[in-house]
Length: 571
Image 1: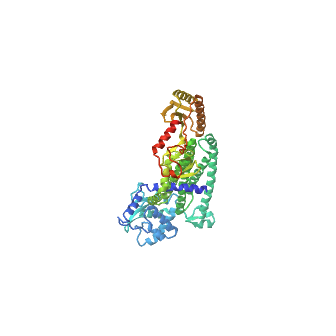
Image 2: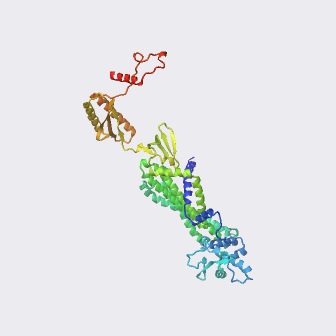
Image 3: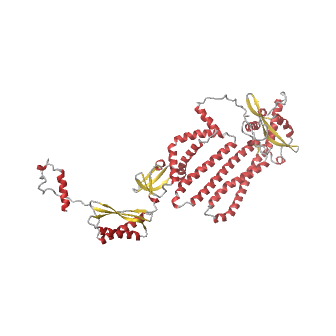
């Protein structure tokens, strides 16, 4: 249940993230939107696509290695520039050279397909001519020899081929024995059975190395944590121990990846298997870094929450988790984009698709996003906090929760009112809990028979009562004689009770009112109270007789008012 609740709260944040991604300016996204606005009309002539995928150095060599792995060396020979070989010999020498080049690349632990440029124009920063890229380096008689790949024009396309000079060097470089000394001592099935061009014993060696390195990194991190725990206990108010253990996990994974990467330099894997391992390690490395940053964000949020006062703890349940969740999603998205980019995918196209999809999500979730930003406004501006007693839209109640979509308030009738944040953020809110003190301002209505001396005495006595109370604050004029009414005199009290607690205020208010009554009684001052008097008009000679004979007879309105005036004077 808790997981589903957290997932539901995360939906608005994911919608906002997608909406924000649509605002990222990329060339691909602008081209995609431009194509949509232009009705999909083509403005330039389509360039033919190479069926052999020789559009970039990386794609060309990857396709070459796949063809060699399938023993289709006639196809692999089409990735070599054979124009210096006589046409009559190309059919035989081409496949042989392709096989030898594949063996060279597979046995060269320094060669990585991911290091090759995935740009159709190649690597422009390697110091080589713009149409030439470095393929791999080899040792030849104590000298370093580099094989290169070159962009050439063929049948209206720009394709990448291994240069003719590099093709001429292949026979000179193939001088190593076909088997390593270790392979001669191993059982034949471990050497002959291959997966992705790699013998079974290499797979077993890599698996064993991974298990050993994982155990070593775990032991290493335990030793580090043992040394750091005394320091963590000393500064426990700054850093929690469980956060240290959480941060240690991605660090341990990073250490394992780096050690495994170093071990790969000594293991003879095929180029394709090496490429697969490097892609997997890139994935693990990126998300280990992202996980480390996420857990550091959690530790920072713990530190911020620990410094909040009790009245600001709504930030710990709303604002800070929202911000931390958004930062985590950003870390995850950046890690995913980094991995896709390293794997050779066009991230500009991905961002363009996400941008259009994010725009559609933003339009569909307009109300949700509006409520989300309303919640952010309420949380950041903090007109009310959880537990505050406030007045909103003609109602009063206690704020129980400020969520991402709505705010819930418990009214005095004990009902729960749920208000969307987009509406709540635009309301006029009166926060009673934010009062530093409470206004004490009763109006006393004195009887008309109270003389001026009694009024002065009462005012002096009341002023002394207010001034002597330790919880009451008065100004220069706490008592004001404000009105002479038809039936009373008005005496206003203006003071503050120095407490924000309304229950305490009610106790002090009752105490003050009782003292006011006792003081008024001791001085002989009475309070005016309204009253009503009922009169019977049937015995008056000038009123109409009762009964059926009186029906239809009306008295002038001024006669009733004159009688009421006479009764008032008589009273």
